[in-house]
Amino acid sequence: MTVSGNIVRIVGNTLLAGYVQIPSIAGGAAISSGIVIQTVVKNLSGNNTMWIGPSGVNSGIGYILLAGETTPDLKTNNLANVFAYAFTSGQNLSYIATNQ
Image 1 (cartoon, rainbow, N blue to C red):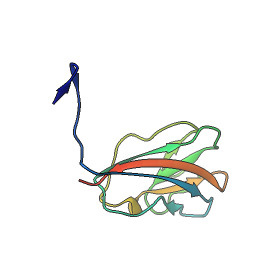
Image 2 (cartoon, one colour):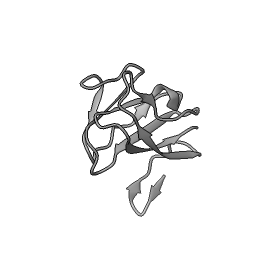
Image 3 (cartoon, rainbow, N blue to C red):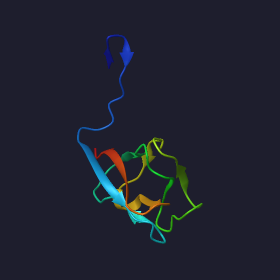
Image 4 (cartoon, rainbow, N blue to C red):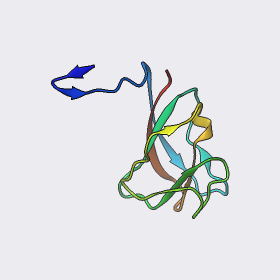
């Protein structure tokens, strides 16, 4: 599909979005739950470092996400498979996902 000469990739037909507070507990916390095919996670500006990964993610283990940074597209079948660990407990991140 082209729109005004730009290539547009159709990924799915339902978007899910959320805003979640992340604790600094060992093993991290799932960002949400729900059937998806891909998601993108953003560490909000002003936050400290966070790590993104599977269950067990921790300080220094996982994909490092500095304040204001966004992950690449994460292919997963459920948001419950995406965990986050916050260096400073109680900081927030946002995510957007598609489920079809």
